[in-house]
Image (tube, rainbow, N blue to C red; front, top):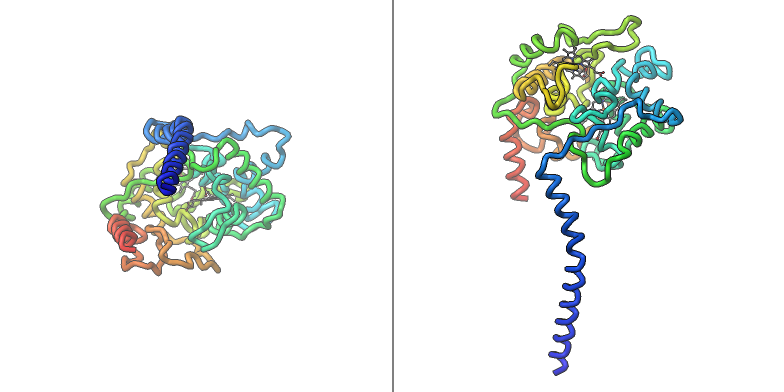
Length: 329
Ligand code: HEC
Ligand code: HEC
């Protein structure tokens, strides 16, 4: 008797909960629907504000923007603050100050950091990430985290990402991931792409072109002593190819009107990264080697594919082997 009474109570309680829950359902559903809709209908990619929209009184943001656009003036070989970089500007690789879809933009920076970094094996702050670009892409040294300049760059990142809701990267953030080719990317074919589309600005030897007083570049270098080093993001050809496809040749292409095909972008990226460049110093990356990206060009690896295949592909067999391993684990 007592048991069936208890059962009845439980039954009523369960029905009550279902009723309460279902009364919440419409709101749950609508937010769920929003998610699926935004994934299935075309959404315009994110564009950031442009520099003219920085309020005059936002002097720290303005300085941050200037540091991104004219990095060499502050930190280049004749830098006003310190001479600690290769003379490139952040903006050479983060198009228009990091506000262009698939132009290596900064839309997701503020919502992403601090975050765990496989490269360092540690939690990474935003200033550490910025200093990574100083040490690798600008082949220079880190700047003081507490410096006015670092605080200005962070303030600028906040300004750029101000309208980006937490939790989901906007469409077009960072660099586009191109589909893997069925073959290895080919530096020999890439050289032809380079001669026909890039050499006129970046120079026969990828050396770029200095401005008159040699304080910075008009056309930034693609390899050689003044280029990014072997620890930089562009030393992975998926990053470089995705950037080139949507942004180069300069002012002739963007994500809506790319000039190169995917194949040409992969091949020219392979060519550029087959050329000599500065070596990264004093860094031990990827303490857990199984966390290296597929196209990381520097061994050792946790699989049996060669360094050459990791650098140029074909990547599909590596990706499949990785998937298989994941399924077994
Ligand atoms: C030679 C090209 C190059 C230059 C110059 C460069 N960067 Fe980068 N930067 C990259 C690439 C490539 C990535 C993405 C790497 C990846 O995802 O693996 C990146 C990523 C970043 C990120 C992280 C973005 C994110 O969403 O996680 C920040 C922040 C950043 N750069 C800031 C800067 C700043 C500030 C400067 C100048 C001091 C600078 N970068 C100069 C190429 C460059
Ligand atoms: C009309 C001149 C011009 C042409 C042609 C051109 N670029 Fe560029 N490239 C630039 C300029 C200018 C920048 C820097 C953009 C900025 O600072 O706003 C740049 C930046 C780059 C960068 C990032 C910075 C660096 O030096 O690492 C890469 C990579 C690059 N170009 C590759 C290419 C490739 C590959 C081609 C050919 C498919 C090409 N470019 C064609 C002018 C050109």
